[in-house]
Length: 498
Image (cartoon, rainbow, N blue to C red):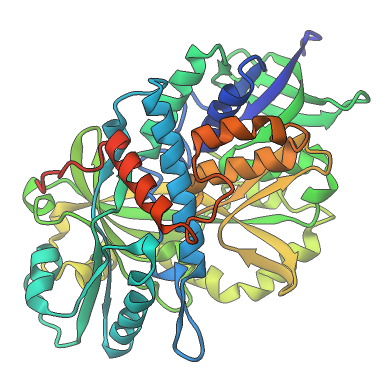
């Protein structure tokens, strides 16, 4: 190992959407801070942020039924949907800021307009969707949402799904045209190109093997060049661990008390992808259904139009699965290696509680292509096997921790764990992740740099005009933001349906 030690202000571990977002924000707030990035793969946005590993929904809670819970009295709680929608509005504002200042260009390379729809079958679910629609459509954040249970109207909206449908079960859908398809892989690469232009030192094929606190309060990282095997020491005042599923191991190595008793549960995903132009041309929306009973929230079935490299394709899934890897390019020993004396009880408790989930995931892994085609035919009755191929999507690591609900509770969502003195933060968890990156990184900035917030506030408000304001209480601001971000990001244009 080289004794050469370099000191810097900020080190970002992992070249995904989270590090890219935090780096871009810090460069606006404090341009003279020195930032270094270390990524174990050969380029940016290759793991969880990659366009083929990420559903690209632009999660605004417009169509995802798992963000709107039905209460025992039958009313629909939309508070989670409101929070996620507000967070996506924050992301759009920051992207617009970067475009307006020519810091990034061609927003159509990463975001395009696309209707978001929810679709359900069966009397009970149709009644739920109607109540959900009534709760959401009266809210200014979800203006423009439509509902229909008329097969003729649904044939206009989703011809591929309605064609040759023989079931007599009632079917209904909601549709909102202000949805988007986001290519988070492309956005990540665009942001890292921007950071490179801002003199950020980005090192690919460099793995962070270890991280520890020095006597003078800095963080020392042992960073190994994967090609040469040579390791060097790098010190920083602040470290952000944004390594997707790989964050947990580094958080544990840091030794901070906040990282104790936390475990991770890996869930893998598969999609069916269709590139047959005739089939692809018949569908133009992201259509989300309801997750089967016992399935994790990330297994909500959906049929998505995707725009990747200016090419339109269809994705259906995700089929959940189980792999002990924490990253798609990770090790089969990731899960077992994450079990430590301080989290073993938490992990065991989670294991006992989640036996049905584990069983479900293993069953999903064992599915044949024909069995997956049967699931797809719930959406597209006349789907042909030869039109669809299997695609392995990204790994997600759900957080396991002790909560008020008990030991070893599995958390579905995105979580920031930071040290008490704000010198280190790690991002854990999964969906809605990438879509809420700007809000999550604002949380990191607020937690880790409280001493600067007052001075930074005017600049933050310049980047995100709704900062510190409840959009829900300011409907006119919602309209203003929607209009300006749609114009800047080119979301007013009507995409061709073919």
